[in-house]
Image (cartoon, rainbow, N blue to C red; front, side, top):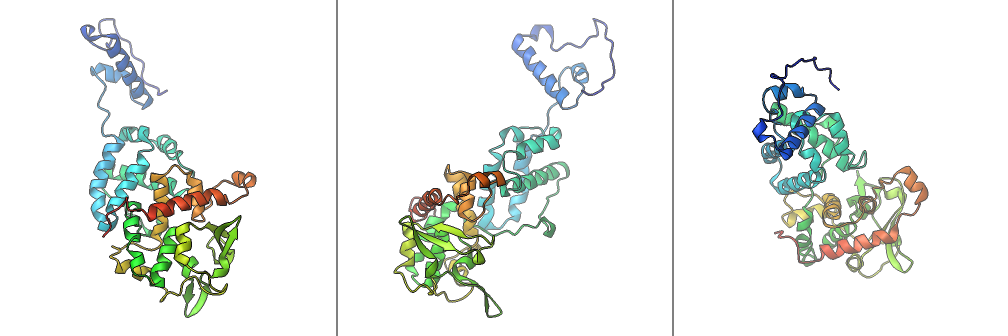
Length: 348
């Protein structure tokens, strides 16, 4: 409790919570709550009473966020603005108590409580922490905070998940291996080099996926990517949906690549040819994760596991050693059904 100065009041001078004629029980209770909040925020309730009323709480974080986005959003690419705004609204809708706080009352404890909504170190945790500081900075100084190289964030422009079905619908009309590779990459949420490999100075540094990696486990098709071709250096099993198998077509020799693409930028060029609006192939991984978070009730860790991001704790992994293949199959089949649907999107 703050060490406020002692005060002696005569009965005549003693501050009153309300004028007698207005001192109804409900109003008195509300006033008491108001003074308790003021004391919790470090204010002197006696000074507030002496003024006849508590001073205004001031701008809330939610109001400050609206002002920040009004100033910030024009700096984003036109193709990504709507998606970014949806992401802010989605993330902060999960911490309504925090967004209702007055700016001047937000301390580190309030920030930590809000961030505890997400797992420490997760993308949402890092992003919300960055957003909070940027919004507070703008509210207090009027300055926008831009990510710098020291923030160590690589951003891939992602197509809004609602637009993916309309875009995907146009790919079969192209029909070549470049388009088929892109369809398969979207359906599996894989990285580009996991599908078509990567060369440096004419030498393979990561070989493309071959038919030897397409297996059948418990009667269901699975793409087993060996750890040598994975960023995390761990084997990764991808349950293949009905649509993904249709894209692959008739099985060929084990050493044959899944797709004979035209070059390293084959999928990106296909995306651009269909008016990709600055989106990237890698960004479809984010589209998938955003879909999982916003349009389904699947556990976040399970959705992340589909993109080879194992966010389970060491304790969870010790007790749960499986890669939850069958549970992930349900997610990938649902994603495939969504991607091939005609309900969503107006991409053109």
